Amino acid sequence: MNQVVQIQGVEAYQAPRFQVYQHRQIDKIEALSQLPEHLRFEMRVVASVFPFRVNNFVIDELIDWDKVPNDPVFQLTFPQRGMLDDESYDLMAALLKTHPTADQILALAQTIRTKLNPHPAGQMDKNVPELDGETVNGMQHKYKETVLFFPSQGQYCHAYCTFCFRWAQFVGKATRFNNHDADELHRYLKEHTEVTDLLMTGGDPMVMRTVKVRGYLEELKKPEYDHIRTIRIGTKSLTFWPHRYVTDPDAEDLLELITELVDAGKHVSFMAHINHIQELRSPITREAIKRIRATGAQIRTQAPLLNHINTDPDMWSEMWKLQTQLGMIPYYMFIERDTGAKRYFELPLYKTWEIFRDAYQQVSGVSRTVRGPSMSAGPGKVEVSGVTEIMGEKVFALRFIQARNPDWVQRPFFAKFDEKATWLDGLKPAFGEEKFFWEDEYNAM
Ligand SMILES: *Cc1c(COP(=O)(O)O)cnc(C)c1O
Ligand code: SF4
Image 1 (cartoon, rainbow, N blue to C red):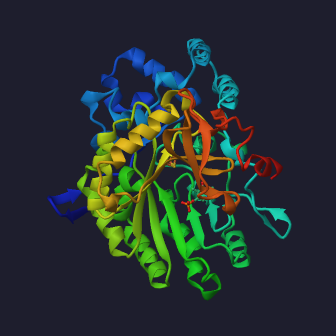
Image 2 (image 1 turned 45 degrees about the vertical axis):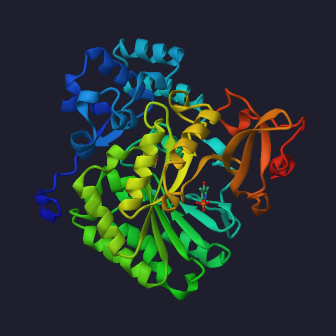
Image 3 (image 1 turned 180 degrees about the vertical axis):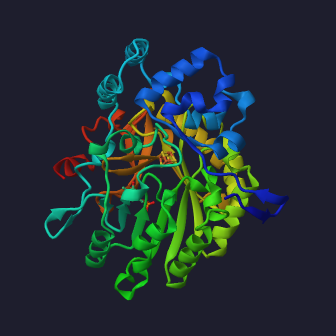
């Protein structure tokens, strides 16, 4: 049922119905029918490897169709030719022309996907915690103070961003993290009093109905969990389905749950994925921000820097300023991870740093809460602090923002400058050293 609500600046807002389109429905998306057939064929080819998911709000309100294919939100949500190398593309294109069965497409897709580093940074084997001697799926405990939790009902997302480390979750059951058991989460947190932060992620946990979210979080109000000071919720919903907080039937309930957690003494922070300022333009997004802030929760923002989407430093500085103005806290700029469609989105590290620097220089101190550009790599989150010259050698200055061993954090280290490097594993130590200071210890873990 559609609902009419009052939103500031909009007379009476008629909430649209939530309608999702997936990769098999390219021909059902009316907006795409205006695109040339060759573009739609390319999308079909690429979507066979990288599935997509998009809703009517994104299509109708966030994409400027006269800018397509260059529109940033279009680039973010829909498959692009450049995401596949020529060989993979040609193989899939040839197969699609033969009227293949779904199984044939899947088999080729799987072969291509395994070449795309579906589980970067040792996610599958290195960070899985144990409970009573058994490994617990659906959780990661990489940094001492923070547990990452992937609720099983939140395994999909409002978008299937191909640069996201989650993309592998979206394409195959066998490789998913998940956890059916809120009880396991609670037992683990109760035992691990060193943990101060719970980070609920996905997919997107905000695709879950409130009653499910409550099943995971309400328990944490009890005194046994007083060591859990912060609850973070990673989500794209704030910009891709803000109705979650305004017009969805259980929106009020969700806000009530958040208020209860805040009242129980928790710091609740929404970690909003926002890649482009264009995502913030709808009045209902602004309304959602207001309602979340009214619960006492904070909203922090994060996004990777992506070629074809957000390489303009002026856009970043405007976005951080607007976020700050709307009551959000800019938190991370990430470097595109070594997974999925990296070839399409990646930029050399030095470029990433230049863009960050040029944007950072244009904002005041209140927006300089943002950190980065940061690589979420195996040993930790590594910030590219700068490019400089020391004793005649051009180097990258680096530091751990977060590390597997807390002792590594905040110790500067240096890598030889390399204009092609796009990730930590492409870097060599500077000054003729053989290894980075953390390398032996990391390899032994
Ligand atoms: C980023 C991240 C966190 C949170 O790190 P903060 O520095 O506290 O924001 C926790 N776990 C993993 C695996 C992460 O990548
Ligand atoms: S979690 Fe964020 S980055 Fe990943 S697919 Fe969802 S919206 Fe995209």
